[in-house]
Length: 308
Image 1 (tube, rainbow, N blue to C red):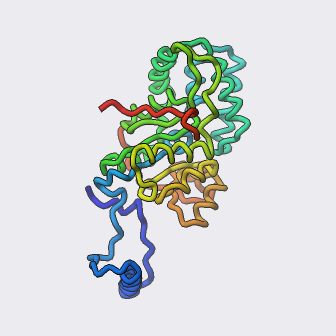
Image 2: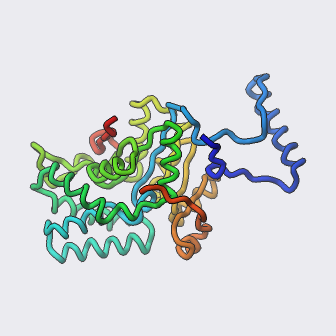
Image 3: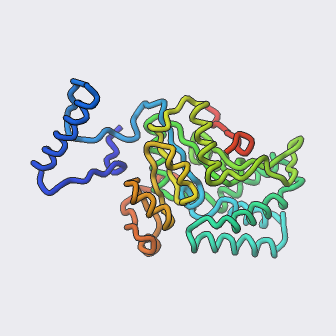
């Protein structure tokens, strides 16, 4: 696999000689500190993602990171089309989606309202029914909203032989459908309670949001034998700083203002796949030339692994 140099951009000084001098000094210091006599060849940084590193994985937020807008709102549109609820509820979903798209951030009050609406709508329906409908809704409202740039980042990890999970406050059933359609390993998401395969209208625990995401990733890493220092995480929201801070390779994707400031202060990598006008609003140049690809608590989350 060719080195993905664009994933790990290097800052070069004015001349080739100063670059060589700086790299030589840094390498000598590293060797002396480690007490190693082994020599490294060439000035290039290690390839990332590292091919064949079975203890590394990648964790991707969903809303506005992998997909434009919020999965829950798109799901609501599909349910309205199938007459699961009345027009006034659709108006609420439409307003929440408009706010999310314009603000580009997750407002806790709006997100909670959307979750409560969704829970009341699915109450009494079978899980299998909603899973089947979710497949249709993905094709109708979500497939065309996947960010090609973020999709290519996920594919880079898959091509390197690493596992890739979605980590989202969206319902785990919806997240699992999206993960499967994108060829990812699986998904961690919010769990709605069901009894005998029928939704009760309540959550199991709390939504997988903010610190709960970090706890879910930590628990999954322990169960899967992952080294978080070798893992990567991707998100657009400052709410996910706890998750991003867990890993050795944090990425801010289409970041909100607070995450952008936090990422810059800590020299985290940033990518913005929105339009040039939107990117200018948040102060980050839009990425150009991105190739389009086809296409926490244990009680509060569920892991659905892809069938092999």
